Length: 389
Image (cartoon, rainbow, N blue to C red; front, side):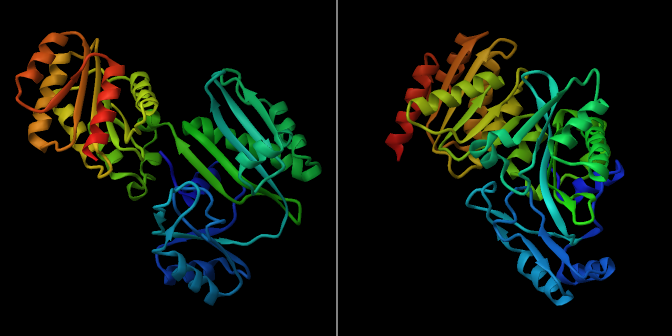
């Protein structure tokens, strides 16, 4: 789950991180009221969407008068902002963040991530703040340092010193940076975050460290432990299909292809998407119905797949271990009848009660294309989509 910048800064402030005075606004008049309260003389007006690259897309305005605050708010609120992370469709700006300006001496980058390869927490830090870290990694990888922390041992003082000295800081700035690293780690761990990124972290002209931008995402499996974080969820920033899928415990991610996929098991789902690409098609989604799907959940899965206007064909790929093939077959038949599937439907079943599952589909009278194996299924669905085009 992602949250907005102003929400992330609110959490970081609770843990002692240095953030500027600020406020959120939903209308231009509210933005002016926030700016008056802050006092100025410089304000930064930021669009709040769940995507990076806002500055390059015109979503961040530095202004020096209340009139300019209002003008910037009018320009941003209701605007569709297109960044490299939103895709061409962009995201509508429904709220803005008004923040005090500050005099910047240097900009840095720091993030906390889960390193799945080592089961550690990784701190990634760079002196090249304010830029896309991907560009820095490609052009000047030597300017990125990574420090790993064993969560069993936790953050140690030497980790904090390494980060501060690695950023070239000294004196009071180095002390503040070490304190900041400790507060960021505490936030990351205690809130079960999946990612915490500060870009830029700045050193001001009077040698103080300030979190100028913040981005956070959280482990969805741990949200039950954090009702305060759950309340920060902004469903208007999420794909409606993904929200609907979560209501039925379906793992769904929308993609931009033409072949809808329904699979049981994350690994099998990814393999299915890969073989569709190999055969010349493009997956429209990742959808894992899980090992204990019922007929009702399968029906809902079909409804979600078909709610995507880009879907021109559907591939159902089920390996029945815990999941019985006859249950899937009943769900497929029920869904096909209920939602009136008008695109080619290819089904590959294997495993428990597979023959019964195939019999249920064969006797349904529906135009379901049966496949012998995954390779056969991928070839058939790609071919059917091309022929129907």
